[in-house]
Each structure stands twice: as C-alpha cells, then as structure tokens.
Length: 323
Image 1 (cartoon, rainbow, N blue to C red):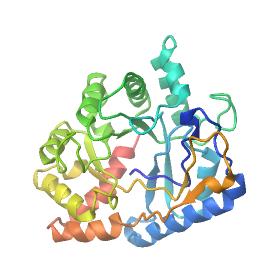
Image 2 (image 1 turned 90 degrees about the horizontal axis):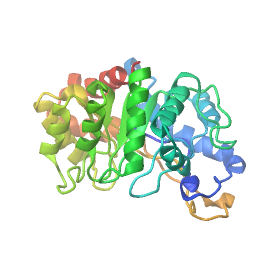
Image 3 (image 1 turned 30 degrees about the vertical axis):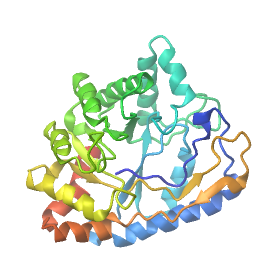
C-alpha cells in the first residue's frame, strides 16, 4: 500500500535539475521488475497477481510513462499517486510552495490533483504543468512534518477537495507524529474517514513512545485506516509490527489495518548537487516480500487468523482503493 518503483529523485526539491536516467533506463527497469517479480511469486494464486501503490509524488522521480513501461513488464498492478511531498527530511517542491502563495492557491493545487486523477499525470519532461500524459493517478498523497507546517497544511486542504470530488483515497506520510492532526483536518473538511490512510505508523507515532499502542487505537477509533508501511526497516521489525497489528485486531479494528514496506530499488544519491552524473544512481536490494513472508509468519505466531490476514492484505486494500 506504500511502495516506490522504479526510482526516486529528490533533486527538484532542492531547486536543482532532475537527474538524467535515460542512460540507466534499462538497468533501472530491470532492477525494479526483478524485485517486484519476487513479490508476485510470494502471492497465492487465488489472490494474485498482486498490486503495489506507487507513492512517488509529483516531481520526485515520478515519470508516468516509465511507470507504464514497468507495469507492462510485470504481472502485478501499479497504482500511481498524485500529490506534493515535503516534510522534515526534505523541503516541499518549489512548485507547491509557489502555488500555495498564489490567490486561490489551494483550489489550484486541488485542480491539479483532480486533473491527474481524471485525465492523466503531469509530464515532468516539460516546465511545471506544461505537459500532461494520459496515465492516471489512483490515490492522493500528503505529507506532514512532526508538526504540520503551513505549506503542508494547504496541500492537505487541496487533497481534501480532490478526494471529495473524485472519490480517491488519501494516503499520508507522517514524521514521528502528526497523524491525528491530519485526521482532524480531513474530517473537518468533510472527507469520509474510510478514504483516509494514516501512514508510517509503528515508531514514535505520538512523538514520544517507541510503541504507541494507545495512539494507534485513537487513530483507528476515528474510522480512518492505520498503515504500517515500513515493515522490515530499522525500528519497524516484522516481530514488533505483528504485535502492534495483533493488538488492533483484538480491539476490533482489523478492517482498518494496511501494510507495506516503503522501499525503492533505485535512488539518486547526490540529489542536492547541481551536477547530476549518471553514476549517482544507487541501486538497492529492495525487498517487497517481507510482508508476504516474515510478517505473515509473525502474525500467525501472534494468533491472528488466516481470515483476518486476508482481510488486511486483500480486502482492505480493495475497499479503500475503490472509487
């Protein structure tokens, strides 16, 4: 429910030109396809071929035609996203900043999101908003720092408008807190809670506790989905995540739990540099199988039934992604 493939490039967030990837195109696509094929191979035939929500946002390495080419190489489905991203780790895109400062800026951002969902995503080969493709987005992404900043807030307001008009779900990035603030904003703006996914849960989600069990229950009690989407990463071990999920299942919230890894096979490392050598692409061993192998084993060890596991892995994504 929250992955990246085939690539991520933060260059434009730092007001630098995007990295050239054409010389590495085949290598990038082959790496992404290889890792995602491994995920497909772990999915039971009855539930296959499998799908990922590709959460790379506007101008952060999101190339719609490259996404289509990757999808055509694979049996699995790719669901792309619209939305601007920026938080404590990286600044918002300058295009987002500029739009938020303009008159009716929130509405302009919302119109961009709606166009990307209903007609096709922006083509980053041109100037900002100059060209568009016919490759449509299927979900809206938002991001907040540990405390929501003004630009982030206005992008959240735009997401709320777009979600209500299109029926698309909203998936969020949080940074050691911020989930309940996002929920309050979206619900106040009239977004249905079943269309809101609060992401990156599992570590210091209340800004303090390593394992914020009560905070997780508070999120789930709003009717929004709670997403554990860094499984396998540092501080997000399958064993720990299984315990967190098991508690929510026991509390009656199984229909609001979503899982993922948030990994990427290819990342442009010197993103803040003005010069962009082709050798700057870093290839990672992105493991998209931790959920379908190690997490499942841990959930069963915790006593979570196969029926509840199928609800989390299959039925919940089907329901929340549907328009």
